[in-house]
Length: 117
Length: 117
Image 1 (cartoon, rainbow over the protein chains, first blue to last red):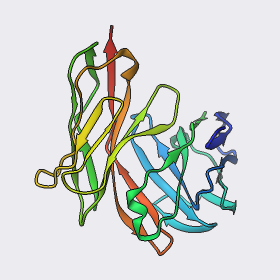
Image 2: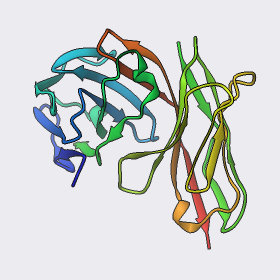
Image 3: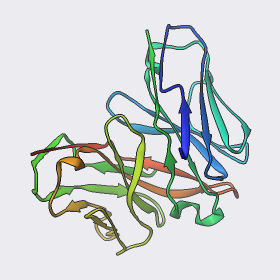
Image 4: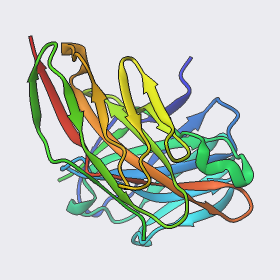
């Protein structure tokens, strides 16, 4: 069974379009994340939600809007796509351990490769 | 802020060679340290972790020791295999956000490892 799944796996679209990436986890975790991996493989956190509440919001253009309909899902909507948005986007999840959260690993999805032309 | 620096790749070795991938960090407090591995076309998987000074994480023949005095967490393996070819990421988690326990993983830039038969 897939623990963290993302759809689609590949997404090719034109500049100016609006697109969404979906993420689901079946691990029963309370916290979910979105990361962006650029062409040089550098990974940077974008957002984190805990029980549908936004917890971490890094310096990301407001064209990016995460939405969490329930704690098992965290979707990423991107408006007015730009060439620089081309990257691999990873969803991840972790269990909420309160003050022990830093001790536990995150589980990553397979990634969505977004190409903006 | 927190940061992680890894040795630059790519690293190319022959099968059965000894591997070291250097990782140093800058953080306040007492971070947890992780090594994640990304096989081609896949998401990240946790390889090993250490949560306090002098802890040694180990898995699949890989080891890393949390050295607070040198702020390092170098990855080692005594005899690498072709199947170890992947990108390796050192990461730290030192912050708990809000009372909900979301953690912010800070990644190094990744080291691409290629093992030749």
